[in-house]
Structure formats: C-alpha cells, structure tokens
Image (spheres, helix red, strand yellow):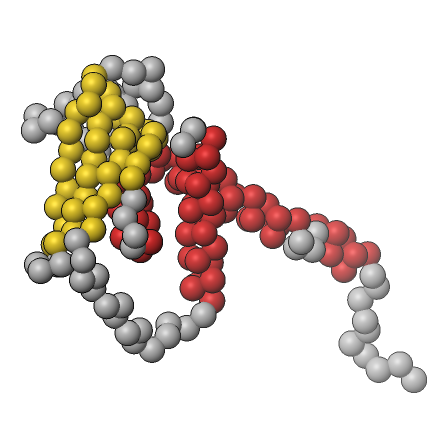
Length: 173
C-alpha cells in the first residue's frame, strides 16, 4: 500500500472516531451489550512499519491480515499507536516488522517486534497517532467555527435593543 492510501485510511479512522465520540455524547448509554464470541482458530497479522527517531510508528508500509476482520482492525489500530524503543528509552530509525499471534486456547495475543533495517528518510516525520490527533483537532476546530457562524450577532442584538424606545411603566390613558 502506498502512503496516500494509508493516510486516507488513517484520516477515515480519525473521522469515524470523532463522529462516534460526538454521537455517543448525545445518546444515553445502551443496556449491556453481549460480548462477541472468542475466535476458535489461531490468528496472525504482520505489519512492516516505519519508525521515527522518537520511536513512534510513522506509517504502516505493508502488512498481512487474518480472516478475522475484528482482529485485523484491532491490531492495525494498535500498531499505529506503538512506540518501539530500546530498554534505555532510545529509538532506532528504521523499518520494523510487528506481528500479532492469537492463541485460541489461552485467548492471549503475543506481539513481537523485529528490526528489518535501520535508517530511512522518515526519521523526523510525525508519528501516525499524532497525525490522527491533529486531524481530529482540526475537524473539531472547524465544527466549532461553523457553530459560531450560526450564532446570532450579540452586538447587533444589543444595538437594536438600545435603539428601540423603552416601554413606559405608567399606563397610558
């Protein structure tokens, strides 16, 4: 997948999250939802990711998915928010492979990270999670500005009220 499609997916996900947050703020919480059944087969996903100098995942370059769409979405979302660092807190700019393996017997997920190669021209780029937050903030700011444009002009209302003659408190004969 090229960068255009990955960014389009990231932007779509951010929009969906922002829309969901707005929708849930106005709707009362539903009754307890049934828990989905656990998968009964082993699942595996793998992603090749670019990591910047801070250790943030910048971009998912490619990946392989399982047959379970929920597992794919969860692992993709997780990998976009990852920080890959050494024990001492430093990071190596490079291409990494991140794999997720689901064990149906234990219901556990094992994540492994492997450096494919060090270096790359994305070392100073912003992390994917920060990009999603920036998109969400811009959309919220645009919604706020749109809402402000729909409000009446308070200054015009005050001028109109002061210009109109005040009604008399005494009854007129």
